[in-house]
Amino acid sequence: MLGTQIEAKEHVVNRVPEAGLVLVPGGTLITATPEEGRALALTMARHMIHNIQPDQDVLNAGRPQYAANAVSLMAASQVVAIEFQTIAAANNYWRVSRIG
Image (cartoon, rainbow, N blue to C red):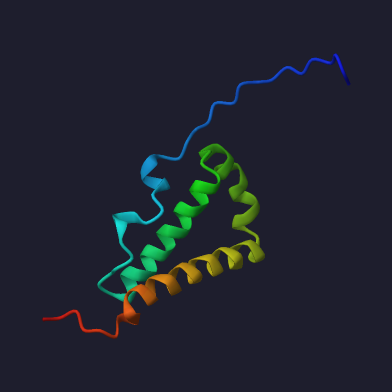
């Protein structure tokens, strides 16, 4: 293979917007309610995937394969659950009253 030239095509990355790359949106894990905590966990999981694969075109191309795959969807749910565990612990599992 020495001497063989490989023509490289320039790949232009359609990068995920910077807002989608923030690992802890809002800069805090503290939320007022468990529902807000769950929403934050989902957002954090999505942002983690965006940081691992920041090319939006690659993400979109893979979606048909994982969107209909039960194993992939369950794995994604596990990631969200782990993020939610972290958020719940940071919020003392919402046992401490935030009123007055």
